[in-house]
Length: 388
Image 1 (spheres, rainbow, N blue to C red):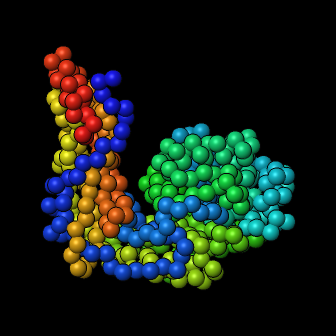
Image 2 (image 1 turned 120 degrees about the vertical axis):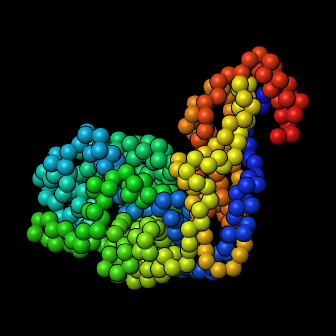
Image 3 (image 1 turned 45 degrees about the vertical axis):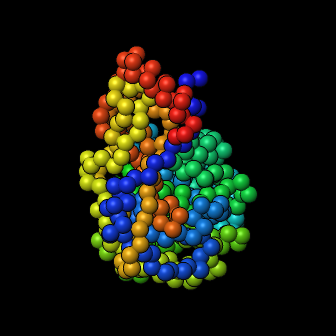
């Protein structure tokens, strides 16, 4: 073969280092008692804090965010209406109802409940019966619905998550990461603004029983307007929270705490720290070329890469330090390349931790080159490929 099998190519970006070395700032010390934690800027994806963010953990009821994401997708596509009604099956009633001992909507067996009310119960009350009813109503069975959950998770880019049920009830094979949950939260906020206000509703009443939103941070005056809490005996207490305090949105995930009060305190502490400690660093303007990658056999040897809009970072106020960044892509890249085609990612690191991953796209179209160009690239690959 005249070219290598697909490998990961990594190149250091001198331009971004030159830009950041004079502006980037040292990470301020922060510690959380949570076993797993991440704080992420919503717009840029910049990670402001992380602790075991890529370690597998049991999601508990935070898994319901994936259930809700599937429902919202069906509503947005028109496959589902808020007024549609689903039955409360014996499975939903027995495994998720009052007799189960878990969080519940208190829906009656064989009753019909609208999608709108089921969604409100899942988000506000964390109703397991409502989650199962949605799963069965959409997928026919909960197992079928779980396959849809995992397909959507893969589409979103949740690389280290596997879902086994719609509720988050314990299952040894159902594991997620804090990073994936943060990105799931960002996905819901970005793609379904018409439904997002449900997460901030204070309470929901069904069957004569009024239950307050389990996210107690909504009442703390720190701009929190979502998303979901979770708890099991094995995993401890966790939360996916989002705030607009300080004029920008942050998404926080904390898990593995020992009590509801500790969950509230640690989440509040992390969010407050994040809103007060960081500032925006404008790195690349909209349309500004970040770097280049080679096009094997193309009419031009390299194509420029740009972000989808401006690329900004959020970095700590305080003492100076430098960040480092790389363009990472799968090569060789073969023509034709279309303008706007996704080709690579910009990885930005702080203390060897990946803090931001930004997709990069071709700035122009590159057609296949003539025979001379193809032969020249083939010779380069044959003689120099192993040195790349």
